[in-house]
Image (cartoon, rainbow, N blue to C red; front, side, top):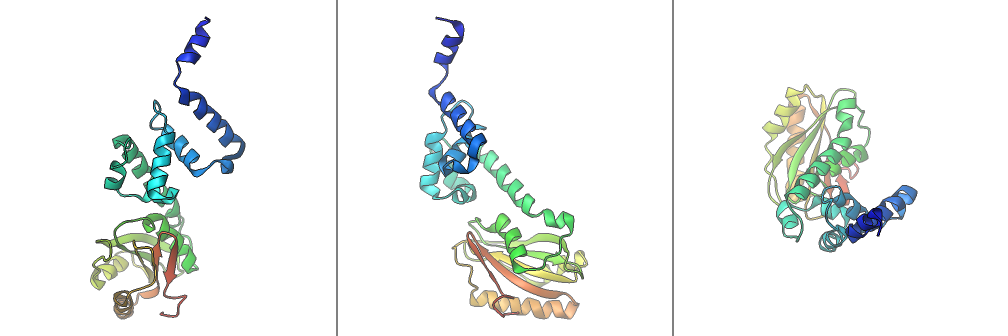
Length: 232
């Protein structure tokens, strides 16, 4: 038998399958199923392993691609075949994705609508399993100066002190701010505590000449704008 044929015979079965997937992606990436996209992506880390079973198991457990990439560390480690290499890879991917959506900070984009803030916040917080409180700080032309975390907490609360929020606004010499936090449970509607906190921050901001333009609550697949709903 010819040497080249021997080499082809010795290759694991998934090599040919992976190559065919790549060719299909080049022709029509939108035509690939979610598990096939995930399979290809995992293959860049697990180069010597058939990643199809792992891709299917991850989607079976976490339901969607967003669910996979937003899953917690311990949840992912419980999946057979998911090791430290993939853990680092997904952490890198999540951070890159969040920073792509935070590009307006560097570009000083004017934040003209709740949707603009919600998109920024959902990329960073939408899939989080614990609650975090952030603030988008704006200049007097509503250009984004900074998007910073104020506090992080548990699955249903993050402690927030008005003085900490205002300290960030003053440090950046912000003229206005948009309050942002996430609801890991999936329902972005505000609680009574959210409403009260917003009123307190509006009063505190007014005293220091910093306007509160909105409070946006994000969940994995939606958001709630206090401005849109007439609370501000």
